[in-house]
Length: 88
Image (tube, rainbow, N blue to C red; front, side, top):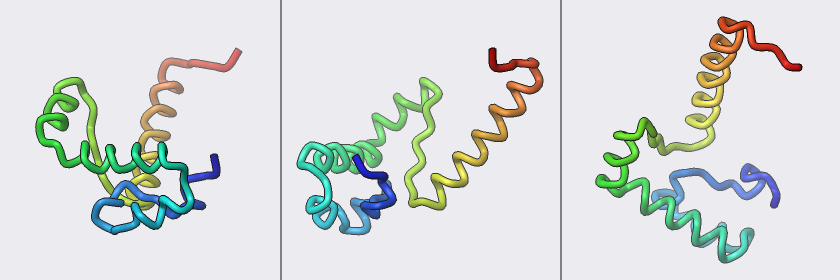
């Protein structure tokens, strides 16, 4: 599958109206998955249950993803270095 960026898909598809446009680029199964994700991100019960398990749902575009990845890289890098973990 081609990179998501190539398709211009973001987690805010339900708000941007891009689901139908994405359908021309993606297969029907992928579109259904994106639509289901869009619905799930609005389900307060699901968000609450996920939160109880430590899962944080953050909906946004490429900027949110880039920020989250940068934060995760720093966090995990610090933890790996603090434990002196090395590649074998």
